Length: 157
Image (cartoon, rainbow, N blue to C red; front, side, top):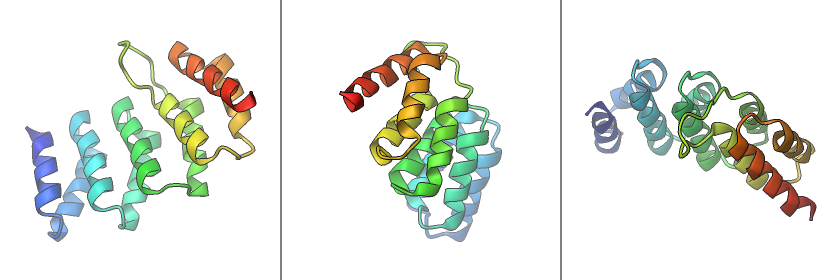
């Protein structure tokens, strides 16, 4: 119900100055991870031109205690702030250090998402191949290791 409220406010009252502040608060301080997740998505979609949005997304990508919120923040950064070199470190940090531990087979690992973004947006970066090699051998998640191995084969021929 609260997630629906987040969507409804963001979509229908984006011109109200209180909406952005309320979404920022929900994204950073709400106790419910689903509400933070939805607030992150709605902030990015509706307030991408606000300088605070990028900062909040960067913070949530690295500091949120929920893997879905971290993943959403990384995805929204990549979607709305494409090819920005200063974001490489955020993605790299996520690919190496995100604390995700798989509990169910169909969960999406933020480390994999970060790797996908790096491969797509920074294929020529000097750290991309070394990072893929490292994740192919050392990632604790078998799915991420397999993904990195597959991409390495494609990139290295």
